[in-house]
Amino acid sequence: MSQLVQCPETVLLALLQSPALHNLQELEIHVFYPVRGRALLPASAFPFSATLRLANIIGCHLPDSVVETLHFPQLKQLGIGYVNISAGALHSLIAGSPVLEYLLLNGGYFKDIRISSPSIKSIGLSSGEFIIEDAPSLVRLILLDPDFRRLDVISAPKLETLGGLSDRAHSSNLVLGTLAIQKLRAVNFTTGVCSVKMLAINMDDLSLHIVINLMRCFPCLEKLYVKSRITMNRNYWRRKLQSLIRSLDIHLKTVVLKHYRGTRSQVNFASFFVLNAKLLEVMRFEGEVYNDDQISITMQHRLLQLEKRASAGARFSFTAGCRCVHNLTHIEHVRDLSITNPFECF
Image 1 (cartoon, rainbow, N blue to C red):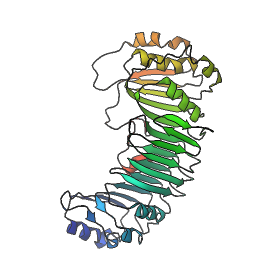
Image 2: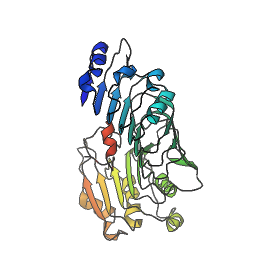
Image 3: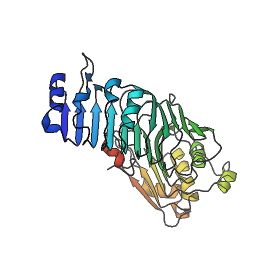
């Protein structure tokens, strides 16, 4: 592996063209030139393109004329961050990587990006506008920035894991086939997306009503991760949601509530799943890392009515929150996209 960090541009190019790197399999380039601009990488900077399996490139300039000549027959992991690259060039880069499995586009704003690949299994995206046109092997789709603008998924029939959806004011649309979601609310819903089994959402204000509607959008959901710091919504449900409960088929096996403080709103929210999720196996209440207030576990057991749980085999745990600074996901390198569950601390 070669890792080049903040070296002069001439040194960078000389190193990349060194005969010692001609069979290189992993490449990390982190270069920043805040005054002169991003380093321009010519086609000659990739003499090892035939053997490269992982490339993580940050802070460079990849012009169209260069990218169009490149072919990476063995590249499986590609990370792009703060790179000056056009939408067309990025499309060519993906097309020139026929066995690509993991794609991370993180840092900066990506506009009008179209992704088509028969081999990609996992994608991580930051802020921008994206269209996933054809991804028959895609299993995990992670939104790293809660303020992403737009994402259209035209075809991803195997998509199982979806994370990073938010109700932030600047968040825009997520479209999955005929399903359109804006700020966690379904604005167009005709048919549920049955392939999605794992969902992670970031809510400004914890809302059971919104989560239940999302469960209808993803009727086969098995794992749910919810992060929320504000609990203004009371989340009463026993009377007004009775008719909905009777028609709702809950498949959830795992529910994780992050930033849990034991407020009335959170208790009402959680008790819905305690008392109605008949297939529930694990429910975890993660406290806030830097919160000195201690909640009474005994009191929580009583308030949540755990003795009346709908699933006799369900296990409940109260833990300290993980110290990761990430937003819901734990993705900061393209290698992390290979993690089966990106919403658990590791």
